[in-house]
Image (cartoon, rainbow, N blue to C red; front, side, top):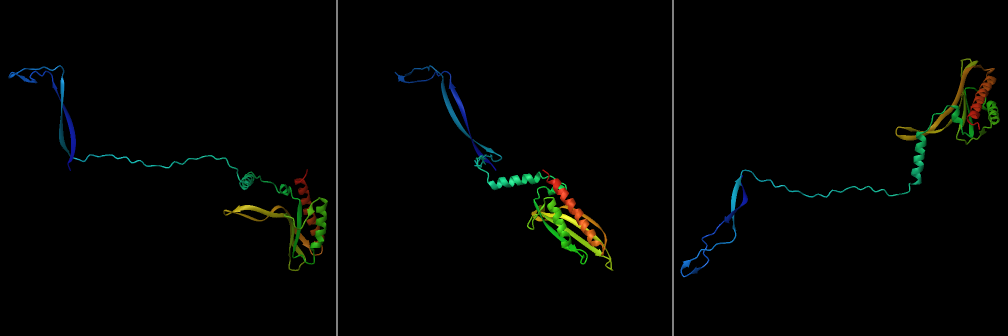
Amino acid sequence: MKTNVLITTTVVWIAVAVTAYFAGKSSGKVEPRYVDKIVEVTKTNTVTVLVDKPVEVWKTNLVRVPVEVVKEVPAAIPEDYVTAKLFADKVRAAKFVTSYASLAGVERVALEIYLSDLEGVLTEADIRDNVELELRRSSIRIDPKAAHRLVIEIDALWDKDKNFATFTISTFVSEVVTYWRKAEIVTSYAHTWDHGSFGKITKAGGKQFLKDSVAGQVVKFSNEYLKANEK
């Protein structure tokens, strides 16, 4: 493919001495004239050239690009955000405490007693009075609606003749705890303090033995409660 390109050249002609310039005629005789300065004569030639490939012409487009501007504007932080931030900071800074230290700040407990397979040997009334007396001696208030539950569970497993039994006594503080499970915050009851024992009893002497064992565990609870809340 051939492309026409227009090229302009300039040739300067210089007359150094014009000696044969005739400006007029008189009496049929031609008088020569001389010029005082150099005369420049310009001649312009137009030449058409054929090239082997197209001439590339670059074209630039202006594109407007949006620029993000960040401006800091003073504003009050909502109270809910401040509270959530403080709570999150406290959760991250939470420390692990021992069993007795978890009793710190507990103001009252709800007393719950559960017996299993002890009919004819022991009743709830047999041990409740003694437990409540020990708690009051340690200035631990009893409130059925308290958030912390002091639970006493006694289970027995008898032989086939119902003469001997293996027993377990569990005394623990249960309360609602909040924790993280499978990307969710959930709540449930958990033991934050516990103590237990086990042994063997006879049907004839089981009542007093169980009452003494429960009393020992309640005394342990009372001592650790006082230790955690000492002033």
